[in-house]
Image 1: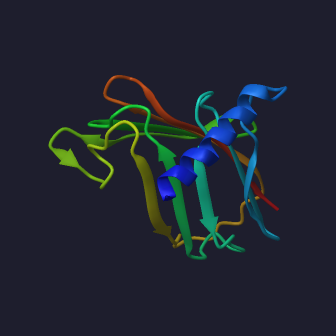
Image 2 (image 1 turned 180 degrees about the horizontal axis):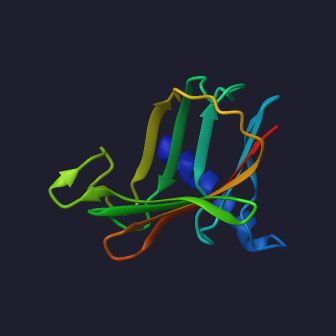
Length: 160
C-alpha cells in the first residue's frame, strides 16, 4: 500500500512538472526560523527529491534530523557525490567524495537497484555556531558508476 501511495504522489509531481509553465520543480521550503531559512529545488528534470530538516534550528549548533528520499532510476553499485558551496557566486567550498565503492559499501543503500525507494535518515550537530550572515547556495550532484545522475539539488541557506 505504501509503495502504491508513493507512486501516486510521484506521478502527480511528474504531471505538475510536465504541465508547468516554467518547466522546473517547485521550490521546497524546509526551514524558516528567526535565524535561518533553507529552501531547495531539484535540478533533475525527471525526478524531484524529498528532503526534510527537523526541527528548524535557531542556531547552527542545535541538533537536527535530516531525511532524504528518492526512487532510483538506475542501480547504485558505485555512487559519487559532488557539492559546491557558494556565496555571492564565489565558490568557497568544494567537496567530491565517493559514497559507495566496489567492496566498500559505506551506506545501507549501496548496491540498491533501479525502482527501489531510498531513504536516508541522519542526525547532525555542529560543534561551532559561527555568526553567519547572508545567502549561501549549495549545489549537490550524485552520480552512479555509469555517470548517470541519481540526484541533483540546488539549496539556498539564508542566515538572518
